[in-house]
Image 1: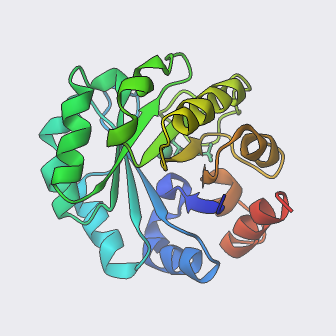
Image 2: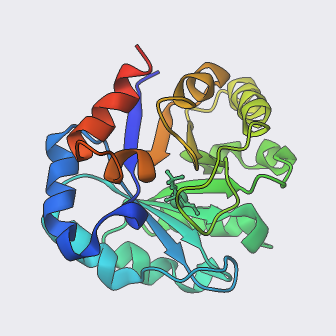
Length: 219
Ligand code: DX5
Ligand code: ZN
């Protein structure tokens, strides 16, 4: 499985966003992860479509937009028009998830589906043909810098099984507490796309060193 590293700009220095995004690209990041929070589904408030637009102007990397918002279907158009390449919605926020995933693809983006740490993944059995990416949350969403929740590992293993059983090519992404200490176990469980905020933007030797330290931990 190709290893994909997705720096989460939640932990970026917002006064230096342009240069930090360029540093991510130079250091071989595979996409940019943008955490959209609404203060309702999650306690924190972060970015809207204008930030996605700004990222698009300074980076050629795919923009991976994680919508932690209620009623995401109301905002798909504006986030996709702003330049989102992948849009991930939460299973918990979508009563009509089948339709929402279809709509994301119809609007021209890749469709991601995510599950909180306490949410069972059984629903995925009915959705495998509609998803390009399954995101397993390994923290309760809302903040960067939280501790990895180990039960995510058995969930990744189960998702790997569901995807393989259904001949799905969808990628498994993991978000929360990814560091050189946790990434190997997550990879072994079957994930290949790693979101990391603190481990990359908070690395004492800089963004490049942060990305390298994650890749080296997988060697
Ligand atoms: C959590 C966000 C994450 C967060 C990860 O709500 O979805 O993307 O930025 O941050 P770290 O890597 O610091 O756990
Ligand atoms: Zn995220």
